[in-house]
Amino acid sequence: SLRTTDLLNRLSPAESVSTWSSCGKSREAIRELLEQKISESEVNSATGEMRDADAFFVADLAEVYRQLVRWHTNLPRVQPFYAVKCNPDPRVLALLVKFGTGFDCASKGELQQILSLGVSPERIVYANPCKAINYIRYARNNNVDFMTFDNTEELYKCKQHHPNARLLLRISTNDENSICRLSLKFGAPMSETEELLRVAKTLDLNVVGVSFHVGSGNLDPASFIDAICRSRVVFDQGERYGFHFNTLDIGGGFMSDSFEQTAAILREQLDTHFPANVRIIAEPGRFFVATAFTLAVNVVAKRRIPEENKVMYYVNDGVYGSLNCILFDHQHPVARVLKHAGRMCYNQYVGTGDHVCSIWGPTCDSLDVIASDARLPFELEVGDWIYFDDAGAYTVAAASSFNGFQTSKVEYVSTDLV
Ligand code: PLP
Image (cartoon, rainbow, N blue to C red; front, side, top):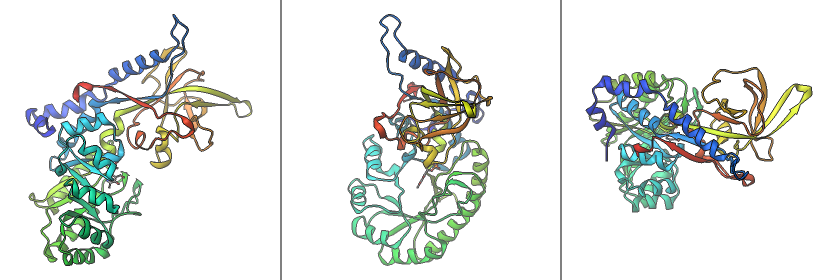
């Protein structure tokens, strides 16, 4: 299989940087596929037959690849283990398998999915500090031995069901500046790490390093500084308890917009605190997929509210489907017009407009609201299309078919990469 690192070696640094930075998204290919799928959904003029106008995603696999190149260019020391939970799309996974990333799995189902792609267990970190016993046994039976813990109960479970696991102690971080805080639920406080290491030593378990997560959607690149300093403290504690730590897992939280800034901080901090013989891995999810997916939805109904001079639009995907990210991931997807009055307008109206409206998902629940105060350039008609950019992270992954609405299918561009 091709590895991104091999690919980068073949390119000069200047070329590899221009490969990802100059081309941006495959806008033209995305536009063409959106247009093709929408025209296929319209009434067949010869027969009058109405075809399905279901909502759908367009996934740009080249964008995932570009993010991967961008990762290796900026963080050559850090091996990415893609967080499958973020978007387990089979083609995205196939691409990442081909280009040699590792995978962060959170459950037996994710372990099964990744192992079924022929990925060696060595390339998996089972990064859930609180695991069911039968999942731990599944990991052991399938030679997945790299996993995280943050409490003593987990150590006793490991001793009994996976005594040869290579364990990473997940520590808590200050994740106040993140969109989704994770340290409220996981991560040992610094006051407990010594005791955990003592118990692990007594049980003769193999703790090989530290892991942390600064919170998903991290808004302050400096959060990594504190987390790396905490990790250094725990590495030193590990030495004192007779362990030989060799791995630091810096988790996820990487945002595309601030990536270069974050990477610069990380390079400096890692080199200052961790010698080159310490293996550094990470668990990025959002960074690889957020910008790669575009969601197209059809306006299936509309209602005027004259007293408010507003229009309510009802579209065929929503909060119970792909746009569950509004609730679970605190996202604010921006609606843009994709097709109006028979004319495609992808990427045309990127600013806001004067037409104030609300946009609702298709279910019977009033919680299913995509935007209460959206601004579009003009009034839409039933049958028009809207799209949402940057719809790849924590969308398809948690979509349900509540009320009998099917989850949106994914169409792909740049399939030659897989
Ligand atoms: N690793 C763990 C343990 C997580 O819980 C998550 C997200 O919840 C991730 C990695 C991925 O984080 P992100 O998508 O912010 O990179």
